[in-house]
Length: 138
Image (cartoon, rainbow, N blue to C red; front, side, top):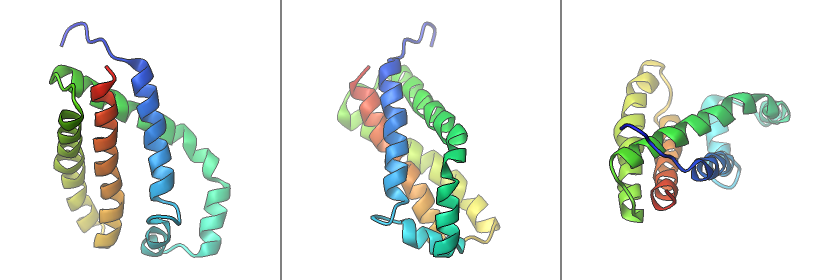
């Protein structure tokens, strides 16, 4: 894969979309309340952590950027250039790599299955959506 030319604007958009999806996924509109119960947080603890939430952005932003960049490299290298191709690759990465590798870690940590499904469901859906964006905007 010499001379890989990536669309950095698409990668930046995918980074932003990944973060926005995470905000929605873990909000009260979707899985936030269930996730809080599964990690054992009270409403007070959640509000306290949310107030200090900005301190996590130095981690979240680069992780989202690296994730989007890696997907873009795969998409480029595999010549994926359609919505369906992006969706397939994203689901392959999200389910076949990320969710599968997270299962033993979750099991050995003694975490509830519901927590695994919420956390890794997010990454599977995110990988699919980001891959579609990156496949069609090269």
